[in-house]
Amino acid sequence: MIALRCPVRGCGAPLRREGARLLDDAGHSFDLAKSGYVNLLQPQDRRSLRPGDPDEAVAARRRLFDAGAGAALIDALAAAVGGLGLPAGARTLDLGSGEGSILGALALRLGLEAVGVELSARAADLAARRFPGVLWVVANADRALPLADASVDLVLSVAARRNPAECARVLAPGGRLVVALPAPDDLAELREAVLGGAAREERADKVVREHAGRFALVSRGVVRERRDFPAAQLADLLAATYRGGRAGRRERAAGLDGLAVTQSQELLVFALTAPGVPVTP
Ligand SMILES: [Zn+2]
Image (cartoon, rainbow, N blue to C red; front, side, top):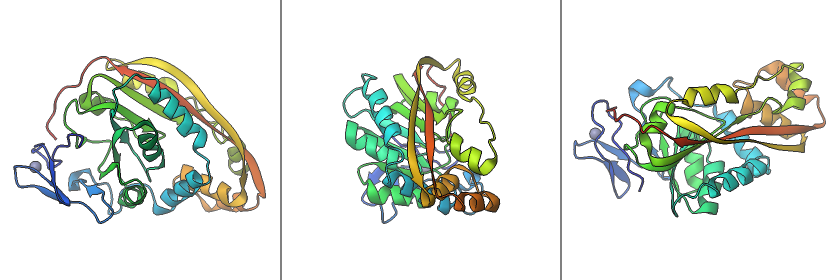
């Protein structure tokens, strides 16, 4: 198991697994849910009573992946990770792993030992049901991560959370960080149809700057795929992408018969240059 640490404030002791729970020597204990995920979210890291993406967005993403909408991205990530020269069974953390389709597929395809950190318990539950070979942890990826220092070889951040300081801390020397984020033309046709053509900003440069000092950019590329989406999937794309999916947008999407839409992600590969500073949670 990837070395986890106790999330209780001021503790940080190593967690070990005994049966259906994780526990430490300080007397803290966390039960695994029936589906196999473990909730390590602490009250101080919770932002609402139901933290994380709305269930509707989680379900929409799962349906899109099941329909093959993320296949090109998964292929590109598998190629990028496969080309990193990491050891067999590389220890991998996915920051903001959602309903798990990407990490689950990569872990199976590349033989990774993987842990997914996700704020939504509903998403972690869906992930655990489908991919029992990965450890799914409910925690806030924006805060102190419940992983030990230098405990992973690879961190993934796929259209999700970023946390440069904590990524540097949990990565072992020589570790790699792979970030995927929407490119400016991501969902361009859909945005044109329902948002009136709002331009999407270039964000990759900002991400590179965020990581400067701890990480060096190794490579940068774009994964682009255009496919026909039937009406129901357009609604899912909106729900998956735009928090809350406003009613006006949905009505305009409902008026579409179907649409060819570009999905486009920037793929950034970073190498850890300055190992992180150990901190207690
Ligand atoms: Zn503890």
